[in-house]
View 1 (tube, one colour):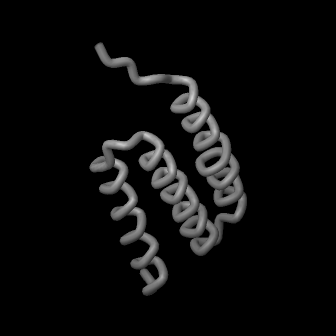
View 2: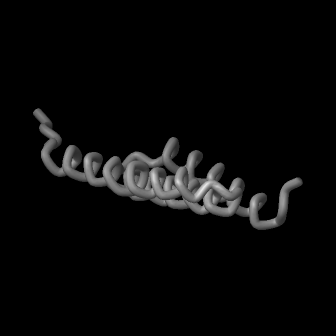
Amino acid sequence: MSTAFDIVLIGLLIACSLAVLRLKDLLAAAVVFSSYSLTMCLLWLHRGAPDVAMTEAAVGAGVTTVLFLITIGRTTRREQ
């Protein structure tokens, strides 16, 4: 049975997913993807899986976001 909090979190997940798809700026997309991972972490925690929530926070919001930001920072746009 879903609660109102679950519905709000799922709505945020859908909104973050659509925002990542629509954003043209890679840095903004990486930040929104990080917020997606943090929202997913909250959902796992609320559903009673704290171990999965901690893993999602560490890997999804932490390591993946840092790797995205480093990659974006090291690449340059070259125009001719």
